[in-house]
Length: 198
Length: 198
Image (cartoon, rainbow over all chains, first blue to last red):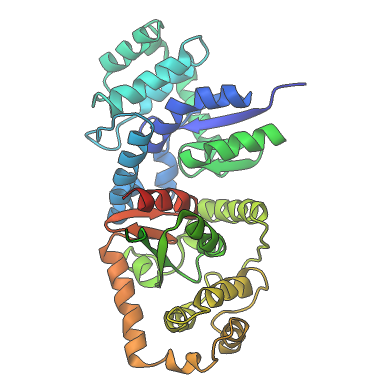
């Protein structure tokens, strides 16, 4: 019997994606659900809604709530939380590198390292030296930074982002089991249960 | 030792408030948390954000997701779900009546009846005859409908709505333990845990 499967769409600048990226691997393993990690960009999706930055910056009450909620949840999860400056970070290069890293052993560690660099160490994830350190800590070659800028790889990220929008994704983290969409870190368990059941 | 306490802000037109209103009483009782039910209106809060209707109507992807998510959650909770027409419903009169009903035994039943009328029976909750039936089913006097239109009672609802905005509320259902805000039906358990702990 094939193992149940789901897709995980995440954005490196997304706060709630941080929580998910740190806890998903163990939960997916326990649920025996195979997960395809798909980095994408929220920027173009927000722009299509008429927003030129994160809605957490545009809507003050929502933003204030998010930061307090993240503080509580990070603490519960045993994680530190720094507010990135600027927020949201430019996550373009990180997402391009992740596409290549995730094809190799160590890809998930790289992704976790990027979130920790941003939200635990307060580093700027658009800085190639930060990403290089994240690759090395995951035992991956820093040369991926250069390969990531190849046209074909850039194109893949644009395609993933367009696909995300077409499949109804409007925020991150998002989980897809076929057409069935689950949105938000607190829906991770529900999404895994769904994938197991179907 | 006084029983732990939290405030529950809900809006009769809100889909996710339906889920909470139906399951909160049993959970609060089990957690031994005393809950103050506070009906309020999201309309003025949305208007201040520049929205003249529910964000679920303005942002199609969010709206599509919400209806599917509600379908899944209602089913899990053993509830039926009809899409109100129009959506969102005009909840002004229901909220005014609820303020008076909640001062009496049967107030919570009245609130549940209004949600069931809307989301299970597909009725229009701005219709006084619908609200009258909800009162009678909760063994409350239909005369509350008229008392609800007294100036002082209208004023109370405006005040609650202003207070909600001032205290950082931007959606429903919302739970407050002092300054600590929790938003969304899936945060009900977390909010009760928080209230118990503090």
